[in-house]
Length: 270
Image: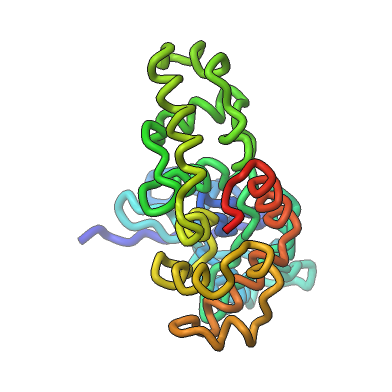
């Protein structure tokens, strides 16, 4: 087991990274400090509860810990050294990447951005959307997704269905045949069951079984969007957690815009 080393320094600020699944991950910006031979200027703060439980404030003297090669973390504030200038941290209510409202899912410590088109989570959103359990678009693996984003051919989910053979041919390692096959696979995916489309949207907690129940009951996207919390709860195997997650997802205007744009392209109408 590694020896745990600790050092004291000043917490200059608390920043937020938006992870690939939309989670808002706080980190400490520190006055650089030597912890066991390594200069540390950033450290993880885990989540909102961690900051509140430890009562960490901007300007605090804090204890930073590092064990082996593990990412350094702030383990405590030195309360007795406060002078009254320290500022309590307020967790953001909007996503720093896309500025849409964030939610904290029931029973979870993580605050997440539900906007499926948020730039910070776009790559993961698309990878999930095209995966086998979802729209099952053959030939659109992670490498191709990354190339399409890097070349500005995809900035949101509807862009997938507007890709042209001529756009794709010029990409590294693509060529005429692969480009034709990809465009065909994208068009073929429009016939996937409504339940697959619901899974593809990346609604937290919504798996294929629950999606099939929703598809069966609502039949069309416009009915589901209008569905109430009580109506959702009345369905078999749809608990409070999934129901609230669906309501929150469609309360996000960007998600509604994405779904409407997909529907206009003949995708996921029901």
